[in-house]
Image (tube, rainbow, N blue to C red):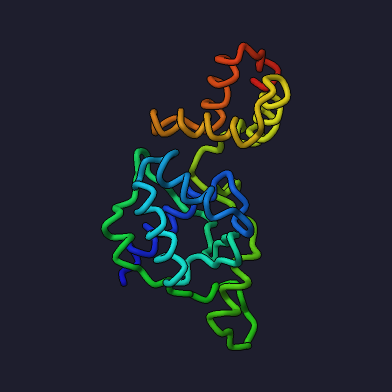
Length: 196
């Protein structure tokens, strides 16, 4: 498989686990995101996609808990990107590439590399000053804003997240924090303290 195919699957997973724990997320939540929140596929297709990603090593499942085996650091997601589901459902095996910074002379098996990668924290953007990408200071406020909206409105955190994600789906250039601010406004909650 081409490098581009690998990047496409990593993009799909990065978007999927943007607000979920990549080491421990319910499989039904992952499938709901694909089918209902992002409208990438229907519920049957979401089940097939989950199975294919598990078979090809991208995801692991234990009971109903899914964990991501891919390294999702520094994944760039172009504006308006969505996966080509036919390509995803055809099955793209995960290729493990040893990291350059690993100077150990030990030979690592693919399973060890996958285990080590799955333990690394999910970082979609780099905060390195050497990167030429502008960093959005509001990203740090996403969790506090979400918790504040949940506390003030009486909604559960998952429901706040679901509603904000629907706003992002409706308007793809929208950031998560902007979707949360709009949701707060709908709920008549003053979020001005979070704005810089």
